[in-house]
Length: 333
Image 1 (tube, rainbow, N blue to C red):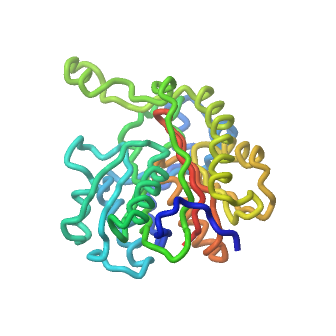
Image 2: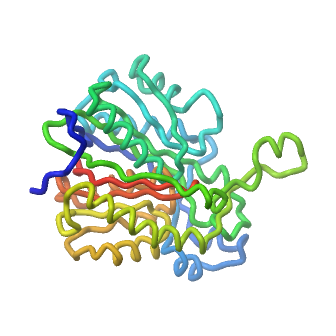
């Protein structure tokens, strides 16, 4: 079995458990095609999405995090009081401060552990994994909960044709623990700030404060620019992550990219030259693009539907607003 390269600290980390919250409302393409003057066929051809899941009004980021977190903790064979820290990646928690992670400590009963949110959009889960890996390997803490959670239905304009029709809601969580051998490779991550405005809100909250006639800010994207960047730059990031991990594409059991667009996923797999033996996550077809939640949700589904993947290596890669990116190879729990 291939061994992952990682920084030499004398300690290693791994993913020990996983959990998921999938929103209860199934939204079809026909349900949303009218306001954007589109059709089921147009949406499928552009994105590969057939349905997406969206949460009800009384379910927010915290409620989704709580369910995913408790499932991940149980999956790892732990109790909430065993968790030493919480990292939540989200761009849709409705408060600047305090953090969703701090509130979650009380909801799930971890006690007064370090807890913080990160804003890295669709790469946020991979950013969280990188932070947790470093904290465990340094001996700073054990048993860290990493969650990607979004309620994107709160920040869409139903008439917008650039991004609204691809977005869904959900949360995915994992527990990162110490390990006897490497379970998470070195992370390849970064940002491309010159394209900062390519995926953006329509206005800042300060703009809305100063001009009360402005509508609530919603998401927009420059689709063609994002597509080209994700495919070409993204492929190089994925290749570098494989190189840093010390494994070949043929060593992988799965490829789990951010579920942004089916065409992007297929093109990345083609450029990586993945053999047929590598299972490619395509959760986007049924659950849409859930930003920071998409990789852990896709991982949970793969392991639930194909448990034989457990223990295998997976290349996971996130990319999105910022423009930010992050990728690492992990051993599946």
